[in-house]
Image (cartoon, rainbow, N blue to C red; front, side):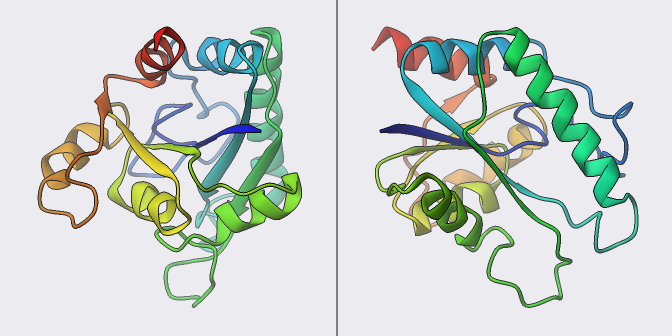
Length: 181
C-alpha cells in the first residue's frame, strides 16, 4: 500500500488561529481536493491525521466536526478521490492523551484501521508537530507552506531530524513533484 497521511488544517483547508469551528469556516485550500483526487487515481491511499482540540475546548461540537469532514470528503470525492481513514484527536493539550501530535498516536490509529504500516509513508503537514508525529511513526516528512507552514519552515533547520525535510508551496505542488518522479 502506498500511503500518504495529511494533516487537515493548513494542508487541506485554510487554518485559523481562532480555530476552524464550523462547516462555513472550513474553506478548502485551492487545489487541495484535486491533489487528493490525483493521488488516489495514481494508486495512493490517503488518510488524514488531525488535532482537533477545539472539541475539548468547547469551540465546536462533534456534529460540527462531522459536518466539516463531510464537506471535505464530498469535495475530495467530486475530484475523484477518497480518504481511506480520518483520525482526529479530540483532546486538549493538557489531557495527557497519546494521540495529540507531535505524538504518533493518530498515525498508529490509521495503521490499525488500514491494517498497514506507516513506515515509509509520506506525512504532509504545515507544522513541526505534524512532521514530528510522522517521523516518530517512521514516515517521511513533507512541509507545505500553506497554513502555518511558512512560519514552520524557518524552524526546520533547528529541529532535530527534520533538517532535510522537503518543502513545497502547497499540497498540489507536492503532488505534482511526487507524481512526476
